[in-house]
Image 1 (spheres, rainbow over the protein chains, first blue to last red):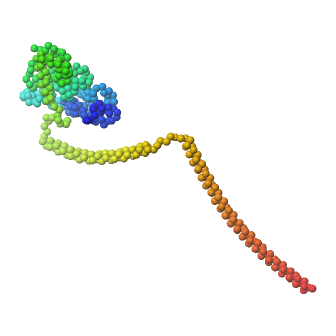
Image 2: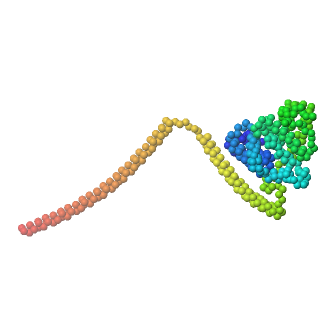
Length: 196
Length: 220
């Protein structure tokens, strides 16, 4: 049985730098996956993951262990992703993958575009629906649905109250439900009234 | 008909807990109680479960990050050349990796052997230190031992000095005896010479006396 994250963090803080390699091996894929879902670019996701681990390593001395290591790591990665998204908005740029995936589908005015939309696989539809969520909701949906963090871990990672996490998730799922129905994923169902 | 508790944050939070399996008994009971009397919320929970299932369709790409955007069609010759290059690169890389790995393994083995020997030496030193009794420092005994050693050295030095003097005296005695024998021989030789001279003188005197007597006898 391997050591827990907390034991490895303690070992790192005591000078056993190799313990950090174990943490990286344990969390790299998940952090990269989360970053990919935020940014839609594998290359950027890899960069974010590397940067997040570098920041974590540098900040390990000041890590108080009040939160779980994974929550802290997700917090770093989420902030890095948000920075990148902000820069992207400022520069008005999109990743190549995002252009390839979303551009033709949304903006292509040629005949047959609708048919192509019908042929898109469910995964792409879901991806676009998630990407279309407001950032606050999208972060929570990704951390909960794809990274399988607990509500408490998400609250720690985002530094928001637990109730806020649940509210954002509830609203995000409601938005997704609407969008997926709009995309023709399934038959539209009558919706209950949502909060203003 | 809408739910009577639209906008109830507490109910929404409970629903999320139930939907993701994090609800405690009380929260589950609250949600169950509400759903049993609220058809729109029952339907909503069913829809949200369906949404969750659909979200699972978005999977991460299995491939490693690629610098070629997906959907770009390469000419066949270019694809073949790229494949060939990649293959060549992979082969070279594999050979290099194998060589590097062998070197690293050998270095690791040497380092491990060195470390093992150092550890053995350290253990042996530790054992020898552990075996050696820790004697209390006795300054009086130390001084007594020091005095004894100084006396011993002094006596040894004295003995060597006496021996050297004896040897020197013996030499001098030997040389004096030899000189004395030489001097005695010289005296003996001188006396013999004097004896010889005296005999000759006596003989000459006797001869002169004989001549005088003979001459006086002739005159008379």
